[in-house]
Structure formats: C-alpha cells, structure tokens
Amino acid sequence: MSIQPLLEYIRKHIDLSSQEESILASKVVLRKYLKGQYIVQQGDVCQYECFVLSGCTKTFYVDEEGQEHIVMFSIEDWWTSDMGSFITQTPADFNIQCLENTELVLFPYNEIESLYKEIPKLERFFRQIIERAFVTSQKRLVRSFSLSAKEQYLHFREQYPQIEQRIPQYMVASYLGITKEFLSKIKNQLIYKH
Amino acid sequence: MSIQPLLEYIRKHIDLSSQEESILASKVVLRKYLKGQYIVQQGDVCQYECFVLSGCTKTFYVDEEGQEHIVMFSIEDWWTSDMGSFITQTPADFNIQCLENTELVLFPYNEIESLYKEIPKLERFFRQIIERAFVTSQKRLVRSFSLSAKEQYLHFREQYPQIEQRIPQYMVASYLGITKEFLSKIKNQLIYKH
Image (cartoon, rainbow over all chains, first blue to last red; front, side):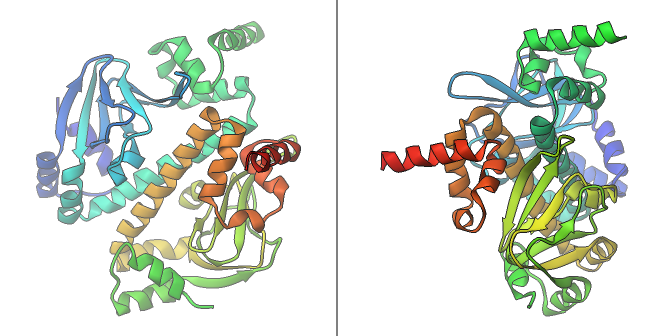
C-alpha cells in the first residue's frame, strides 16, 4: 500500500515539492478495511476524509422505517466522507461501508488544519475537489426530480462505467430509488431494444 | 450599495488586511437586478459567483416538459451561482432569477484566479463556503427521499424562516416537489393541529 496514487491525483491539480509530499505522507494514514466494515456509521462523528486507493464503498442513509437509501458509491481515485459531520464534528447522517476489501488514505480531522497551515496550496486542492463534489450533488438532485427511472439508470451506467459488475443489483436499485424488480424490467427493455 | 455586508461576512471566516479588502473591492462588481431579471439562464455560461446584499433569488431547472423545479432560494448573506457552469465555463443547467429587486456582489470568472493569487486566504474562505453548500445539497437529497412532504415543508420553514412571506406559495410547492393544492392541504392540517 502506497500513497503514490493520491500524489498522482493531487498533481493533476497542484504542484507539491518533494518536501511537501513528505509532510503530507507524515499526516495521513493508510488503512485497509475488509468487505462489510464501516468507515463511519450514522450517529458517529466522521473523523476522516478518505481517498480510495482500491476497492469500493457505498454511502447510505437508513430512515426511520429501516429503509436504506444509497447516496453515492466511491471507487478508485474517488473521495468519500460524511462531510457535514467531518467539518462540524457532529454526528454523521450517513453510513459509509466497504462493498469490497478497500484501501484508503485517511485525512484525520485533527491533522487537516495543520496540513492546511504547512501546505497552504492544499486549500486550493480541496476547494477544487469540493466544488466538483457540490456540482455532482446538485446534478444528482436535478436528475432525481426531472429524469425517468430509465434515464437515471442510463446516467448511472455512464457515471460509474465499471461499477455495475462489482455491486449487487439491489444496490443499484436503491441508488436510483426504485425496486429491484423495476430495475430488472428497465434492463430487460434495454436489452430488447438492442 | 456597498460591499460592507460581504466584508463582515468574510470576517467570520478569515482576517483580511485593509489592503486585501481594497484588492477585493477592486475585483468584484456591485450590481442591481430588477424583480424578474435573470442572473444566469439555462444554456448560458455562468460568469459570476454572487453574494446577495439584499433581495431574493430562485435557482431552478426547467425540464423537457416545461416543468419548473426549484433547487434553492437565496436571500441576504447567501450565495448563488451555477457552480458547475462557473467552474467549467460550460452551459448552465440552472436559471437564477430575481424574485425581488436584488443587489449582488458579483465575483467575475476572469477575476477570480487573480483574486486567489493576490489573496491566497480566499481559497480557504471559498473552500469553507463550498463545503457548507455541499453539505446542504447532500442533506436536501436525503430529505427528498426520506421525509414526507409535510416533514419537508416543516424543514423548509426552519431553514428559510423569513422567506415564506416573500415568495408565492406555488414556488414553495415547486421547491418541495409537490402541487400547490397539496401544500395548501399540509398547511391547513398544521393550522388545525395548533
């Protein structure tokens, strides 16, 4: 396990000196999670912003009826966190669970301020990452109230091209807010059209 | 019209020297819009991040059936922009229209990079603002699939305490994704309960 993929990812946004890369490496934590383990659970305080080196996670919310709602998946080179909980250090709204054995780079809350101080360029980097996350979230909101289930499914396949083979169908359905029977009907219609 | 409210707002996050405040003042644009005017229209490229000095705006999306979906409102001390369009300089998904005469501080796209260069602390400021916007957007997504219409309405009143008196009821209904008849039923139920 190495933070190289993270450094390559960061280089697309900002230039870090080798000294800055060493500082970064000294502040983050590399960690393996097993399939099924939780990175954060609803009600706990989220301690990390996480960069995915390998594996796959789902971020979901369980409502009062026990119904699970999947907000996002994260795979290699994506980020995951309960941002609201992380920045305010209050209980998380979301669970983040590993759907495969997953390797992460964790940015601990109690290190992130000193990281910003020692490498101010990281403010820029995280600003840009969060701008994109915000845009993705807004677009998902728009899709949820303006696209049909079939259109949303097609968009899902486009947004997460590799992911459908890696996760159970009922999770795709939960992400789309439909039953797995309805998802299966949509997929059959699409096969029939080809 | 003065940028004082913006400077006070910024001071809650970062300290600017008076020289930095002058640089900021030289890069932003103060502008009045009339009720009904658009700050950005779906399909245009969004040129500004906007801070609301006074007035009220709605951000909405019109789908292919001509149906309007309201994503957010902005009032005094809030921000508004089509962030996806702004950061990528590609056509906007959203319309932002003034619901009252509205005074804004505009951060033009072609000035923002030089602002970040001259006042690097602004990276921090905008990172924090966007983190909060992202969290708000995620929470709205969760509410949209886990709360009843009545619960969403109660949350709306809590989130925007002053706004309900300022905008037509059908817009509140559009924001909640329900008909205005259904909203009116919910409100009657709530009155009846008191």
